Image (cartoon, rainbow, N blue to C red):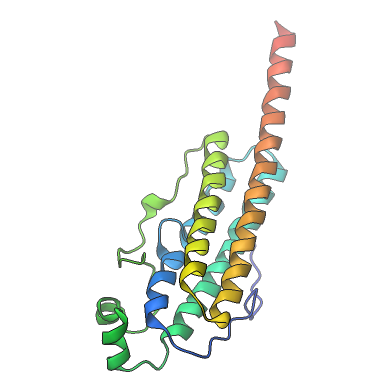
Length: 195
């Protein structure tokens, strides 16, 4: 069950439009290492998890990733609101603008639309959790790259928050993997004792 609180998990209040920056940040909305892919990946993988603890970890993180998707959407929207055609032309935002105006559309920074092949769900819990660890590191890297390009503190602060949460998620997936490995060792010992 999901409950929605009508506020962002972290405030986004951007005063200055910057569609050039929005073009890069949109990748965290619909790119392969973005929040949409993460939320769908984890919420789908949770069904294969063998313990209530690991299902809860994936459910919690997948749900939080939806709140991150909302934040990234708010950032992109605020960076592109009320822009005129001169800004669109000068900022390199024209290709995106032509198809989506200032709507928030799930795509990567080059305009390639979101594709479900970005969601790794194998049913093998060790493979999936290992992929989740890598996915969180890739998302952290993208946020690091955004921070290299962004100089507006109104943008940097929510991006730093999102980056920090990727680190926490990496740690939680490590915890889930250790729980699974303990469970597998316990089962292997039980099978060995029956022989």
